[in-house]
Amino acid sequence: MHNPRLFLAGVGFFSKSGLLPWDSARPPDLPQSLLGRAYKGSFTNKIAKQHPSRQKYQKKQWHGRPRDDSWQERLADVVTPLWRLSYEEQLKMKFEAQKKILQSLESYLHMLRGVSGTVAAPQSEGLHCLLHPIIPSPTTTGYRNKSTFAVNRGPDGNPKTVGYYLGSWRDGNVVCVPCNHLKNIPEKHSQVAQEELCVQKVTLKDFFTKGPGTVCGLTSLYFQESTMTRCRHQQAPYQLLFGEPHIFEDLLGLKIRISPDAFFQINTAGAEMLYRTIGELSRVNPESTLLDICCGTGVIGLSLAQRASQVHGIELVEQAVEDARWTAAFNGVTNCEFHAGRAETILPQLLKSPKDEKLTVAVANPARAGLHYRVVQAIRNCRAIRTLVFVSCKPQGESMRNFIELCCPPNSAKKLLGDPFVLREAVPVDLFPHTPHCELVLLFTRDLHGRGGGNIVRARGSKWLQRNKLSQPEENPES
Image (cartoon, rainbow, N blue to C red; front, side):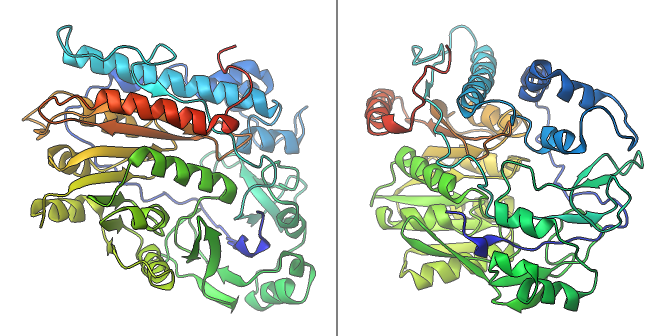
């Protein structure tokens, strides 16, 4: 699964730090208590307590001076902080972390609804929703299909060291450390990172077409010159030095086109497990319309298009929308429309005047910043949306606000007028071995006028577990 075609040489030459253009808009008047509980005793802190060397690294200012632990170990502690644990231990810790997040959410929602509110009987793990065992990644080493390396001064003073940064620009102690030892980097990427790269584009091109870099077998090489760690094509245009303007990936029976500015999961094998899980939970059928919110290159919507009546994808990055449209045309998918722009602008317009009475299934896969509160309002207030599958790589962060708004009682002050959703099922899917991160897939449903859809959800959850028992860890994550 580790196709060298997927290595994008995103070599950046940085003169100063830059701020990421995060959208800081937040819903008004939301309490901080749940977020506080979610952050307290966070997963990162838990790892630090179990590994004192990592805790020491996090708290102590080192100002670029060598210490007892090696540079390589310090970098591994930052990039892959679980590298000292067996993969079975990693899965257990991630499962426990996701369970605690869900417990905090359910506890807070119970408080909002009041003692007299309707609460379903506990399902599993002391939760009212059904928490499935974590789905492990099919591959645990060298799984990254894309690597972006920095070039700057290393611990030995070499100004052309290739690797990842340690330290902070604010403290003036940034050092670029070689990363060939990291468990998530493919060997061929590491071989390239150990070579010296020159600033000149011609030399860089020759390195990958005639020199040692040919080991990667690149089909595309882009160069982006920027003072920021990460930015979009509009801010600093990608320059194609050689090869095809796009890379392609085969996923779930589709040929997917990917532009350099488009998001694509770094673990291809794990992504297939994730998208299959989303399809299972969504229960899309020919009588439903699918809304794919923050759709990226459109993989989720395109993979479910044959089951749905119509698919609408919404994505901010224009290159990704162009990729989704190309992929749909190439694969003969005719019932998908993809819209470029902000979800908070497009989604309310799509939902304002539905042409038919078909039920709508929504899938949201936002970035770590979560959904804009106007998107949550539009979902909550659209009666046609009975099912929502929410994918979050950081559920203890801003996405927690989204969960609260989706499930809290109606609130006219916040324009949350529709019936609340209920969290039914949760499936952790590990796409990032050796790191604290995993994707959490949450199924929210609501049965308007109380017609009792909960029993149906529980029944299909049981069957889903039986069909996927081979993906479960052999040991109980709680043991």
